[in-house]
Image (cartoon, rainbow, N blue to C red; front, top):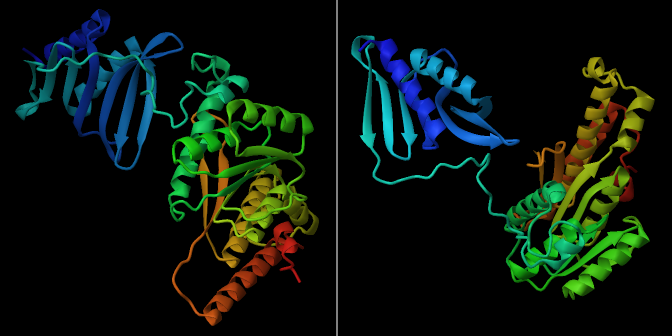
Length: 403
């Protein structure tokens, strides 16, 4: 048989396997094309908005890229790939494997082999992820309109449910860096309707088996009353919500402080409260960066970045980075190990930045060495302010470091 006949035979078997419902996947390897670092392509059948699609996973050396195509277009694309770029391709079905291979002298062969283990195909777009917070038997999720009494997550609450679990996953990794059993007091500043606060209490008490006290701080009185009612009916005896602002909240001892999307300088107030309470872990997701942006716009410092900051959108992004960068420096000044990372919710919400401070014992250093390090950090803050034309940073002023 000619090469064209073998290629058509493979495409026909692919099309037939999809039509008859026995298609599992395609694996293409031994890439000989011109796209740098592409190694393999894997194809599977998915259902997106009730339409069958072929999902192509392009496996590169350091990343994966997923593209979805209508079935007919995907079959044509597969034919192009196995004709020109990939020297071997395997079609997996529930009944057999069909292997196409480019051999010596550019000759193509197709062979089949029977499968020993039957694999049932799935049309799930993504593999079902095991969530830390499961909806079954959670009365607080019912009262917050996340799930029904049978533990089914409402369609319009899927994004919020995934977001809750994503935050818990992030906190799980950060909590592991703290000494075991050292979470006794948790404060969620700006707790809102309490979605994360309830889930975190649930996780600490029922997964980690910690007897931690959790407090939500919220200015809106109706939300405080709502959340306290849900906490009482859920039997969450060590969870309470108090009315007040972050700036006015009186802190005692805190092991974990959270402030998600506290607007502008309220994030600074939360960090200040956490440091003053000697919190072991501080996690904030800043929202708005107006204070520093106003400073930068007022003074209009001339520097190498002026060609960027003359544009409003770039000024906004620069203000965000400068604000959070100085926050991280001040956390380090007070002995915290810092992390700043960006995450994107799997609910496709906008990007968020988390600023994290972890108080660790660290290596034993002399008082002199610590003071030298603090002097270096303070100098870096001053240099940064001067470079961007910043008169003051709110968190710096709270500690009196701007004097």
